Length: 588
Image (tube, rainbow, N blue to C red; front, side, top):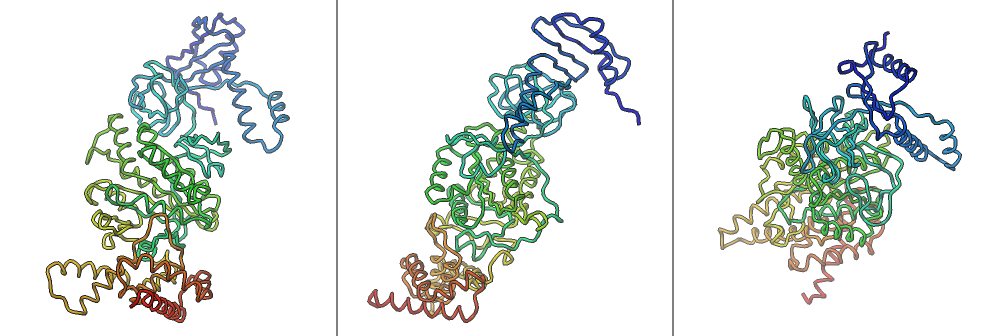
């Protein structure tokens, strides 16, 4: 096979140096160029007094830098690579590297900046640049190729654009956008480029992962069948989440969406689950408060907080969820169970819309670009429960979306609802009525369902969702009727008791067996004859009482994940005894 030669522009190679090359030097350069580009090429010398030692060569889009500065950079890079790959003492390795090192004539493709502003730069001259490739600007700022046109490319910038001017030089790196990854990130707060922002020193991670990666194929996955418990009885009993699932948390502003995600992270303590919280477009003060909450509850040790605040540029906010997922995939591929929270994807879509409009892409519905669905689908499809051959790790996603006045039919909410495996809808009216978490039973759903629920929880919950639906319907009709019969009154009391039972304090997730005990009591009408205000404390005191009286039953539930009819009757009997005891104490 004959080796293909690169085509040059006008078959001219422009040589820049302080001194004109000798005939011998020019002959050597011609031999090098003819081998690489073909025989029909000539050298044109250009004087450049700024080049002290060496020369620069431009052949079409290829640039060769043979100055002393360029060769020293090559040596520095070879040392950095050697240090990163070192296992033991690095001194002999560096010595060997220096002795064997020889500089290479590497072609660099160089472009020039046409326009810059608002975190976007348009560049000409980089004909072979790829989508998603990292570019380095003259001042050291990094950018990522986001738009490919015939004679120019659009690049989003991951830094300050004030030092980038029209005509500035841009270089290709031949690397796709990525971040450093590793266990060193646990307990840290970082930005989407992997740089620490918590003031606790540098993070020295040896591995590097691309932020954009294809999702695992069907063959590489296994069914979602292991619970990812939130510790919230309203969710675990009716809308269970499995490891590897994508469950959307959706609702208006200030209805407790982040609270559900935080409770879920806190509930993973001691369960060998790594959590990643990605904050997109939030206030820095809110994220700092969240980090302090995690630290207070001992959850920061197994959590990474990735933060792109509202003051960060649109490119940084855009890359944040992909960078968080790359970090999560590192742990998943190592056989770990990972939980990732995207808070929130509404702001992520807004950041992407800003980028797209600045890149002069056509706006569509609500001014979002046409590929906004693909934006989130390629992100959320990366959540999976990997096959045992690949280590059996899992990545569970809890994307958060903010609605306007409860409108779930808006563009971004409907997109993400269709991508995910279910949604937990939080209703403003329920929240302001004191029902927290304010889960709307009618609009919420988990498409994995009972597969991600223990048999004990399934047995204990029984007809809970149906009973709540009947109560909500009866509650509506009750508004139009003043005279109620005894049976209807009892049903309303039962429904009110169920709703109150589902209330839970923030940052107080319940253990699995506690949820089972409370559900057995609720479905056994234990709460029906209690004053509504007493239920909150009664259920917690009841759990302590039952676990002391029949610890063997509790151990059996936790060990097997099952609730036999015999154990259910034992639990109900002890709970009824506790109810009588409480009534006597209250003087009834």
